[in-house]
Image (cartoon, rainbow, N blue to C red):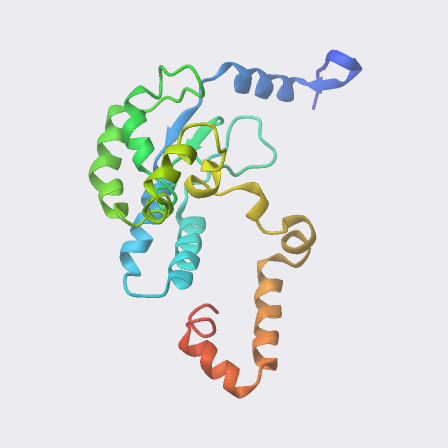
Length: 217
């Protein structure tokens, strides 16, 4: 195999494969994917009546198992959140109302433009958003704050906290480097089972009532 290298800025060499991937990423426009939102919503429809913890765990499992794996040209490590190299996904369980207000202008807005088709907009407005009405994190937060507080902290820039109640944020993600990558999901499950078995009979009995044992593992 012949490797063609290009001298990049600072003297770093990049192969033709890397160069093409970089140019495509820089020059392409981001696009919206609705697949993850569909899978997450379908899973929650199937688990109505169960505890929140179980429903979220099941939705994560279902999405990981059913999400399409797109392999782009020249990739050696594959797997992405959607079917585009530069992709935006919808997370209606966190927030959807602002998306409903703004998505007609996603492609033309100055900041963070995204391509989104008419078919996608029709789909989420008919099949996704109605299900999450009154159930999203955004709506739960807004229902709990006084109107005078909302005037200061909602979409004003005075208090920058919208990333906490509209989307998942980095500081609450799991410790991937020191835990997940080292133990793997299987190792975490085994460790959890061992700790559950070490609990007293009384605590294990309570745990079962809270759906944190048999249903999760």
